[in-house]
Amino acid sequence: MMANSDNNRRKFMATTLQSVGLTALGGLLWSGYTDEVKASPLVLRPPGAIKENDFLSACIKCGLCAEACQNRETNLDKETGLPKEGTLKMAKGGDHKLIGTPYFIPTEVPCYMCEDIPCVPVCPSGALDQLLVSDDKGELDINRASMGLAVVHKESCIAFWGIQCDACYRACPLLGDAITIEMHRNERTGKHTFMLPIVNDNACTGCGLCEQACVTEKPAIFVLPNEVSKGKAGDHYVKGWDKEDDKRVGNAKAIETTTERSSQSSSDYLNSGDLY
Image 1 (tube, rainbow, N blue to C red):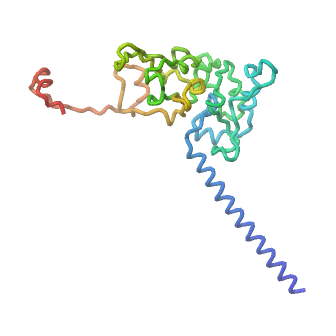
Image 2 (cartoon, rainbow, N blue to C red; image 1 turned 90 degrees about the vertical axis):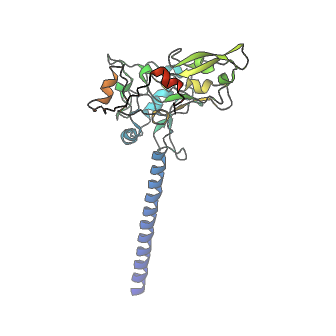
Image 3 (cartoon, rainbow, N blue to C red; image 1 turned 135 degrees about the vertical axis):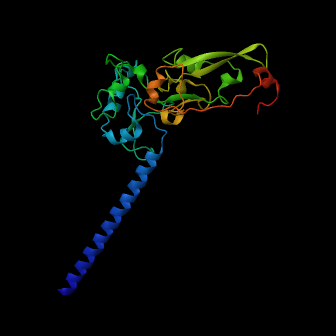
């Protein structure tokens, strides 16, 4: 009887230790996974998404935004009347994104800039904020979206080679605003013009329609999240000609600098060769 009791005790202890070990291992694996997905900044979120760290905390992974995107009226197949693949995907294991959070890949399905933005109002947690995609009257305005910024890789963009191409420009829903075409003389041939696509940060919504439309084997224009694609000048640089820029620096104090002036005239200085 005593032997059976000892055996049961040993089995109980072994099972307990195994459970503790598996729990600890699971915790380590989950911790490593969450660190990995949070460390990956190359994720494009739906319109109205708040800052990424706040988004990951606020999103309850309900999938309502992806469902609304899938079932929008503009997403119906003209032949069958059935919904086509939606823009928004819900991350699953192996996607290297936090499981259950919405994202999109422009080369597969870009954001089609729905005027009623169906994915945003259905969000119950505030991870998608209607105020971020609303005008001054409080009405939804998809043109206020800032999902990312399109970036042109000049070395692979054939327009910079001198080949006439305006596919990204034509695909842009904000034609002439988010992407403009600049004309430059082709000095190599002397008789052709470069038609160069220029992305304007103040208008680009990051919808990715340009990326999908790009004709090169791998898109020469692609959308990156704002935190990755944009630089930051810093509060100590101010646009003196722009009164609105004063609001950005707030109460920051200006740093005064003095420069010793030379007795040379400007023309003498320019001709002296001492410019370095």
